Length: 278
Length: 312
Figure (cartoon, rainbow over the protein chains, first blue to last red):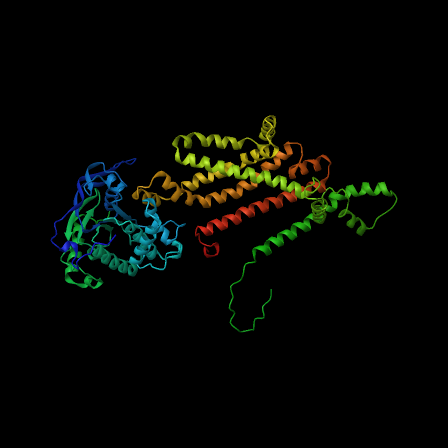
């Protein structure tokens, strides 16, 4: 399947008609625990359009991962409405509409790198030749050509996470859900993977929802940042990043636009009492 | 071990080496053998005095003569290791392999019953585990019964089971294998239930994002994740299987097999043959467990598990 050819400009920067991919209306999720209910999500209203790169940022307990899991139908909301590609999340999941990248690589230790990437393709019943071709292509895309026959333990943490990204891309979902994928990595590896991810997004035009608690990472990657705050988990602010150039590299972090957006994000976090001690 | 280290020269391997595993085993073995020979002196002395009295009541013996005699006495109370080895060699080679007089014939009989029961027990254990993991009702209802089944002493069950199977004219191999299986399946079930449930939340969530079916979840995640658990239990199971087969042989009146040899020797008060049967059954157990370990290593290496020397 040919990759959609993208113009150099970033999807968000173009004035193309916006197609909503994810729509949440008055979404809430309350966990019933022994002593008191936990309001993980409260009155979430959010629209994510085709080709957006949206980061969910906030302190621990603000519900950003929970929101991502609701999109993926890994958690059931207790109120409100959510659609993914115009359908309820469980239908979207059964249609394999999204690829999910977890905090940890979640590679299966008994499978080689290549066969880990092939796992979703096997489940989806793809032919052997097609599987091999896809695994090769997407491993090359994350710069892991030549590591096909290695086992996960033979790879560094950053390489393992790249395998898990290749695995999520391999069945070519239009939507990528990423839950702090680089959280456990050192900063140099993280910078590198951020750049690679940005290029990949520019090339493929996928819709990406990215959970992080790093302000520089969110500003660097996103076309839009959703700032969340805890107790109850809610959306504090939405910050547009289209002021930054489409083909960003790491140097963009020293520009005044970048610093200004980062400041805005920090201010929104402060408004949500994210820096308070409790 | 000495090295020709030049004084003052840098020593490449200054880290003190812990003694190798083989060396430690041999040291302990040597100690046991010494104790064994010493213990044989008082144990066999009584036998000897009676023997001497029969030959010539008036003759006196030197200390060295007595010492040598206690280690070579014909019907010893405690046979020495060299007597057991000698008997092992004599009974293994003194008759054709198909003869009941050959020890190796009996080893074969017991090994066949053990491995048959082991394979059947492993399959049963795996099947039960799969049922328990997938069916909520089985999970709640079956486990207490399985545990209860293992609290009944095998010595009480075996004669009963053999009598029933005998009445149904089932072959003695199948009957012995059935008792072997009775002991084998339990550790496999317990371990496999744990193994099939071992995949973490993340691995399970991943399968859910792919909308994998229950069958795919089993084949691609639960089963491969359980393999290390399976082999850990198989090593226990095969040793138990040997116990089961020998108990069955004891209960069938010593017709054949190592259990039969043990029983016959005990009827005759023949300590040497009892010891030979006992040592042979230990060796058989070691060989069987080692074979399972070997297969385990092959399988786990094939599944890409980290070689043990790189774990440290």
